Amino acid sequence: MREDQVWQTRIFEDDCLDILRWLPSGCVDLIVTSPPYADQRKHTYGGIHPDKYVEWFLPIAAELKRVLKQEGSFVLNIKERVVDGERHTYVLELILALRKQGWLWTEEYIWHKRNSYPGKWPNRFRDAWERCLHFTKDKHFAMYQDAVRVPMGDWSQTRLRNLSETDKRRDNSHVQSGFGKKIENWIGRELAYPDNVLHLATECSNQGHSATFPVELPGWFIKLFTQPGDVVLDPFLGSGTTAVAAKQLDRRCIGIEINSEYIQLAQERLDAIQLPTTLFNLLKEETKEGTNNQQRNTTQTPSAPTLFSQENDTEGNTYYESVGT
Image (cartoon, rainbow, N blue to C red; front, side):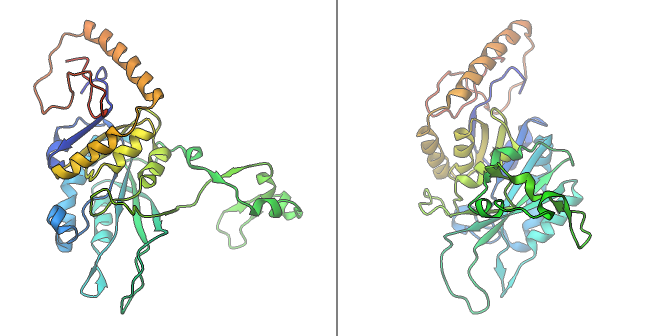
């Protein structure tokens, strides 16, 4: 995979570990995925026993770390399940194992499911949230916070109307936390930075998949950690939600899915989206540049699994265009 090859969207029907091992190092800007939860979706993916989950996931994580750029991010949507009346610790064990593998556990975001299904259990209440674990390879990573700012809210209209003397200077924390605030700085601002809790409804029409998350979930992280034209990877693509979000936001995407029925669903969803004009222009420019590079470089690359299509077919936009082989 060379610089003169144009990326757009490509879906592979295969085991993710087999495809990941073929991808070149440092080719992905962001990984967003929700792998099969332990002992769940057995009819879909066969299920992984909680006691074996870390052992199963670590080889995949090693390849994810290799293909991720140094400044890239890895967002893992996951949730512990209940085993014999208590929460299993496989997610906590996985976090510790990933740190030993060299990942930095940079942050934890919470997906609050605003419309979680009601129910009653003898020893707990309904699950209304899931983890979105943020891992990086470096303390310095790409992050575009302005892209996810939110409206200030009605509170600012009353709170900022009459400021005290304290509001007009930096008021440091009284518990010596090192934090402080100057309320006056918020006058005239319409947008603010969000917190780390995402309040998003679950996907009610689940696109024929047993565990579909809303497009807004990967979309939020795509906006936060990438820019238009960057490459997003989902090694457990399912019905294509991450690819849909990436395409809507002018990003390129690699999706890997082992279930042929979900591959078809993903393709249909992508086919329904018009290619954004900005990405179309980007592809045209890179194709032109790639053609120039082809004229200067006649070196042949070894054969490999089909990643780039020779056909200039934009229908569905689920291909890579090859201009350098």
